[in-house]
Length: 156
Image (spheres, rainbow, N blue to C red):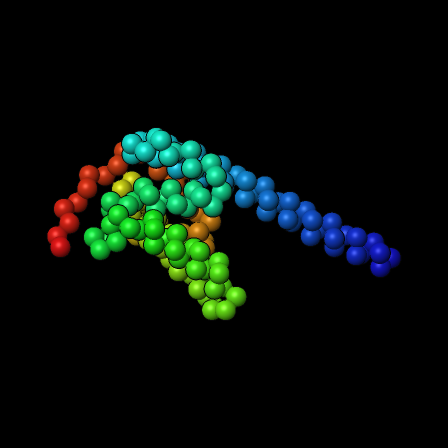
């Protein structure tokens, strides 16, 4: 009797992780298709294939908004993101919550991507933060066929 309960719990646990794996694969394809099409449209067809490499596709997001970020980090945002990711991987066992920095930078990049393809960029970022980033692939997939908004004049 106890073995049946334990076996049932193990099977439920396994089924839950299979479900999560399937959802992760679907979200990955949404993100890859969306980023690939956006990169092609932005004239970065030579690096659009990066959308299909897990974890590296986050660098493609930063490359897509490189010209749109704050002027002090313009042209260096992807480098700073890479440094933040490496430091997060190295120092996460010593410094708690340091892995929040790359995620915050990714939200920052997503804000500029949403600003380029949506009228409600703040809403998109709030939804992304509330869902811990799980909605970003769906939102980028939705942006893939939209025309970009005209750039605003930046007053420095």
